[in-house]
Length: 90
Image (cartoon, rainbow, N blue to C red; front, side):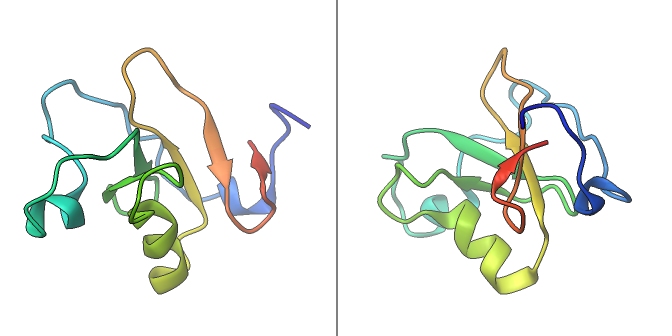
C-alpha cells in the first residue's frame, strides 16, 4: 500500500534531490551514453542510476550488487520512494 512504511526504510537517508547535483546516470555516463528515461537515487549511499524503463537499468543493478533496498525518484517534483525488497512504494 502506498505510503506505508517497511523495515527497510529504517536507517536510510532521506536524501533531497538537488537540481544540477548530477548530470545523469553514473554508469551510463561512464559508458558515454545519455539515453536514460528517468533517474533514481539510492537512499543508502546517494548513487544515481537509470530506471527500469532505461536500457541498462542501472538503479536496479545497483540494488542487486549492493543490497541497498530503498531508492527515490531523482526527477524534479517527484518524491516517491521504492523498496526493492518489498517491491512497493514506501
